[in-house]
Length: 452
Ligand code: ADP
Image 1 (cartoon, rainbow, N blue to C red):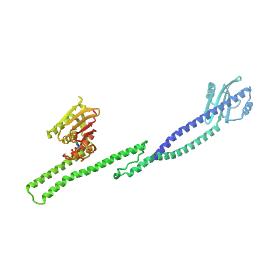
Image 2 (cartoon, rainbow, N blue to C red):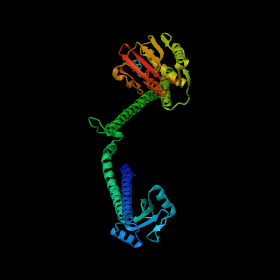
Image 3 (tube, rainbow, N blue to C red):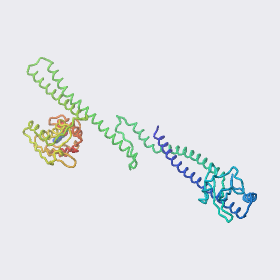
Image 4 (cartoon, rainbow, N blue to C red):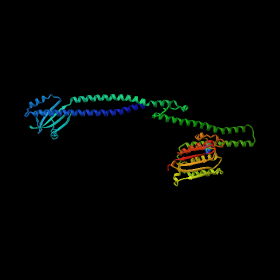
């Protein structure tokens, strides 16, 4: 079912419930007043009859009828009976109309009784007079009242039906108008394809309502999509370039070697080059495999003391670059759980050591400061170098696979390490921030939230 129809139906249903309650209330109120008015009429009738009858003492059966006739019968199916206080009918035989003893006793005890029997309303009054005490019972049918109530019920029913139909149509018009912006957004979105991700939804200048908020959110999503499409495109272009270069070199070397018979020395040099390029190829492929691995949800998490991990990285790197120094500083609380992280040890080792390796590499093995501390945000690791620095415009780009800044091209590397590190840190819900000044140095700030 379309949202428009669902909204109209819901709107109509709500209105129907509300209208039903109001109409029922009105109907019950009118019915209550009708019954009350008719009882008042019956009471008046009973009192008047009693007064006239009792005004004339020793009234005979015939004169009772005359008295009754003096008052034109204003009520339909009216029956009047008078009983003495021994519950004996007076002046007239009971006939078909009679009230049971309990009702008469109720009249005596309560002085006045109102009751409804079938479609008749009955009033009974206890009337004291010098010639004795009497019970006067009057019953009648409120034919006009019933007629009016029937008419009122019919009018209300048709009014109810008509209101529902009108409400449904008005509801569908309103919901169509309300949903118009969404239909517009849908139509606009249909125009946007992978090849036209640069298109955006129109947003009002003031951005006041929810629809503008929705358009804005979709636009942000498109922005992200466009960016990730772009970075994927450049990743593929860079990856194929990086893979093609060693393959072309290997092929070229082999073909040149095979063109004619050569000295053993030449073959050795060709094979050495081929091995070098194959190493490069295998390094790139391994890095790409690691990159893919970090994109997969990793369940192999364990408790890792980050201070210990930093010691291990320092040991590992000091072996390789003995001339450089990594100065570790620990500002840690006594509670070891504050510096313990749930994570994958091997990946974290790769991630953090990549940053430190870069710091050493891009500062020509000057000393690197590495500090670890805990604060409200979690576990913080700061890695500072006094190297070549990073251009501000490159600060976001260096996380893209294969991206290398212009000033880094004289240093060995393939531009994969930082994107791998970024993925590893994100896998551990962490973030990485960089401050850098060209030719002065860089500071990499890694934060891991600690839930302990
Ligand atoms: P690689 O080190 O192989 O070039 P990375 O992915 O590790 O690749 O780094 C990407 C780029 O980020 C580097 O090429 C360099 O331009 C920049 N970079 C990273 N760390 C530093 C640093 N400490 N100082 C200066 N530039 C850096």
